[in-house]
Length: 256
Image (cartoon, rainbow, N blue to C red; front, side, top):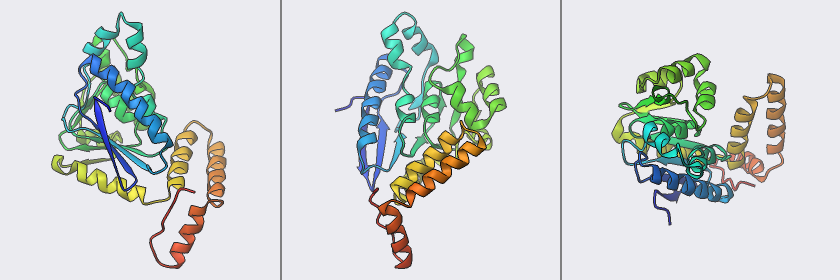
């Protein structure tokens, strides 16, 4: 069905594998369309509770800024499509993990920033090199990076265009974990399945409370948190959670 990615579902987790490197503009445009279509399906699929996006290639999350910008310069139709790679991922209300097997550069890093968690290998490097060719990040990088690592760290990365290694990315909070290359997929899948075993409504509400709360005052964020907490008490999953605790068994959440 898709040409630039394939996916599979297991234990309420969807694993999205990007199967082409993204330095080619035409493939990038196709990926943007296909990722948008797949995310629309994920949004409506109640069986999916957590998503993982990754790829076998070490350069899956690396995109050549020069190739992309030159191809977009005189083509408005391509420009509209290519600028929206990260947005479809960011709109999902389910937790998404980026499993970064190698470097994340340019729009590939912007795609990873649109995810909720980022797990990378020990040899990974990260950068937004747009400034070197007179550009700025165009797919959310200036906004999501600063919200994630703070204004000063984000400005340093973007204004210098320099790459940072995995240890530095972990230190500033750009990635949540760094793991050996051969263990990345197994570690990420263990994390995803553990998350997916939790109540799907509470997963969504947690993401909503944190993400929306970042753009609110503290008082507004606390009200949002309280409202979502109270809503959870009206769900069947909350009843199941209490019963499972009292009966000393694993809860069987249904997302209702």
